Each structure stands twice: as C-alpha cells, then as structure tokens.
Image 1 (cartoon, rainbow, N blue to C red):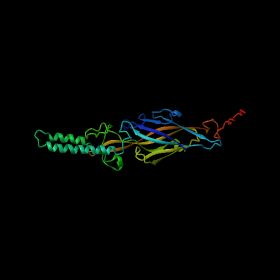
Image 2 (image 1 turned 90 degrees about the vertical axis):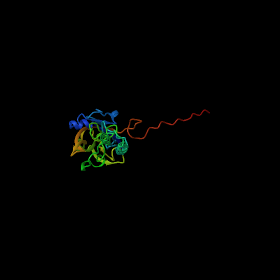
Image 3 (image 1 turned 30 degrees about the vertical axis):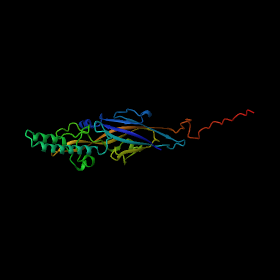
Image 4 (image 1 turned 180 degrees about the horizontal axis):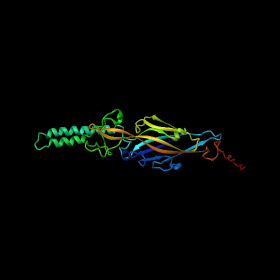
Length: 270
C-alpha cells in the first residue's frame, strides 16, 4: 500500500501580498524529516521520497504526496466550517439588541442618539462584495480579525486572510513524469473538500524540482465597497527520490520466507 506523505504549505499572506512574492514568506514542512527531508520550515524544502524495488528490478511500492496550504496569522483552519457565518450572525443580533435599547433610551433626555448609532454601525462590521471571482466562502461574509471578532467598518488593518489556494503544480518533476499531481474532491471539511495530491514514481532516483501556483486574496476597496481580489504567485520546492532493494525487516535480507529455528526435542529421561 502506498505511503501517504503530507506537505504543509504555510504562507505569511500579509507579507506576501505586500512584497508581491512568496519568496521568504512561505514555510514548508513534511512528515519525512526522520527519513532525510532537508530545510524544514523554509521555502527550500527538499522532501525525501523512499522507494524500493524487487529482485527483478521492478518497482516495489509508490508514494503519495498530499499538499495542505494554510495561512499564517489567520483564524485556525480547525474551527467549524460555519464559524464565520455564526460570528456574523451574532454581530447582527447584538446590533439589533443595541438598536432596541437605543429606541428605549431615546425618550430620555441627554441621550446622544447620533453617537450611539455610529457605535452600533461599527460593531456590525463590513461585508465583502459578491463578485464572479469571489463566490462561495469568500463572498458576502463579514471581515473578521484573527481572534474571530468582526472588524469595524473603519478599521480593516488587522483582519484574517482567507487560506491560500493551490491552483496548479508543475515543473521538472511533472515534466519528467516523476509525479502525477491532480486536484481531488474529499469530504474533509478543513480543506473545503478539495486538495492536491500526487503519486510518485520511486523507480527513478534523483532530485527533482517542482512549482506550485498559489492564489492569495487581497482586500481592496471598489466603488465604496470591499472585495477579495485574487493574487496569483508561485513557490518552488523539490523532491529527493531514493531507491533500494526491498528487504525483510527481520532478517535484512530479501523478501523470502522467514527462517524457522529448529524445534527443541525433549530429552528422554528414562
């Protein structure tokens, strides 16, 4: 059965958007450090891929890669899928309660209704405009900060960025047919049901580079409204494929039958 290898693509979205590059703003990790992966936690990760072959030279096993992109300094991806909608609804409910309280207080002299309305409007937050390019989870939602609070309409400096999206994997490893990447559907709620995966041809040792095209989203004003504008950047990584004969873990020899020690014969004490 193929071994599942995970590669975490952690992006500092804020700095990447400001500098218009993923270089120095991407941190890659995998679960093969003890098997020889190099440069963990940098944008120069070299993932170790251990392959093996049978005595006749045929491939013994494949490896499967899974890429998982995350945003640094954003709401954790482990929160429930409806978390953002729940927080937006709570802010609306609180605003309605405040308006009802203001209506009661307005009959009392000395109440600054204009100031109270301004305060309530800020607590409601700002919704992102719905466009053809920001449909789905990015459209119509309110802007939250990294603690999950609704951001006031006059303050969008500290907000939670949407998770990065891998849109393509290409380059030397793909052209040489070392990996066969594709986007797959899944019931996994953390990745919104989509993730990139690839099988690896482990019969051809060597170091191969590949590129990831990653889409980030920048909050920009347009006609008095806010929308998430897609920004496409690229990130480079590498695979180091090794291959060795498949051995028995007990004897360190070939995949033959296990040696059986001779049975002990009871002695005849008669």
